[in-house]
Image 1: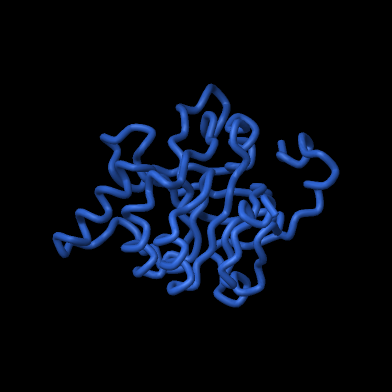
Image 2: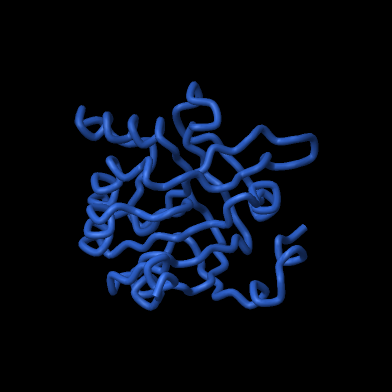
Length: 190
């Protein structure tokens, strides 16, 4: 069942993006664009970020190559019978801000969560050529319908904060920070 069935009309014609994102495609995105994400993405919350950065500091390899990837800030609930995953709504992004510049330096192309990013992260995104998406907060059960496959990748002992690889289809999001330095939250205040 597609999320589109539950979307208002204005969300039915989102710009369709294929993951992993191509640099040229990211360069065309503008703050405020409504998009539909399709393909593989990785997940991570506080514990995953802390552990990834600890591996980097120790000179150890990461469990996945983050170059060109999208990292979704989510801690999914367990899958109910017959489902791929439980609720999978975004978590507050600023909690990952202390770790994000290190991951962007590895070539991370996009991150996704909810809420604004710090000025330091926004500068690091510009330097890295990365964008930030917001997913729809409070709609975790509906967003989970866009997740067609879920695979545990690393840090199983972290429970919902483990790193997963999701295969998504028609996953709706909004571009918050683009490569021109625009911030959709600030634009809407004007």
